[in-house]
Image: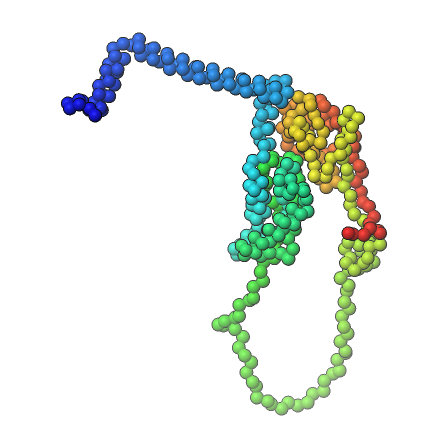
Length: 364
């Protein structure tokens, strides 16, 4: 409690502020000292920030084993970008969103669902979406989910929906791009509206019977049934059994993609069909202890029957047979190609692709 007759608090603060301002105006040396103190504090803050960044880069350099602080900063950035974002539930929601957002809107406003969709996921996300890494099962689940969503939304749905899940080593973990769709459903067939007004055809009125003279009618030749052409000409398509539905293929064949093995220091490593990422990350099929090799150095994928590689923005680059490759495009590997990861050489061994006969092979 303040005593009776004491000045108000606001008046006291105002008097102190006016007195300090008067002293600063009367004494320019104090004003200069205040400005110098502010500059000193700002400079001290900048020095502390630079010191913290320097220490952090030194720690990252020792952790990643790089030869320069620039390479350490690159490794830290790559680690942050490749770190899986979100939980498995969040990733599944992104997978669902990548599918269910795809459809076609007709000019009439009708929405058509796709019959075939392709979804790409990163290798690190496959196990988070399916514990067993089963691409076929994941695609079947996606197809049922997409068809159910299309029916609930009132879209035109084709009779069969097929979803293909592809593993793309070039994708960042945690990001699932929108699915690619094809084979859309047919729009609904609407009944034509009955003609009204002047367009309507009036019913035929009965006409009074009038006798007419009998006239001889010339005998017309009997009509012969038209010759029906077969839908498929076996003689013309005997070399293309896939075009003839009722023609049995005596020698069925199936395309077989090539296999890829990488050789380094006398050891051979097999690359799975899902592809892989080479580097110093734990999931790399080849262990690299060299500090010049980046954490995520390059990606390998199977495109059709060809194996391709792509640099993932590594610090020291990637070469194929001595030629540096661009990180924006995929480069096809050949038998015996030498892959250089910042000077670390890896030799590619590719099995020849072709077809195999399926005679006598039973399906289980």
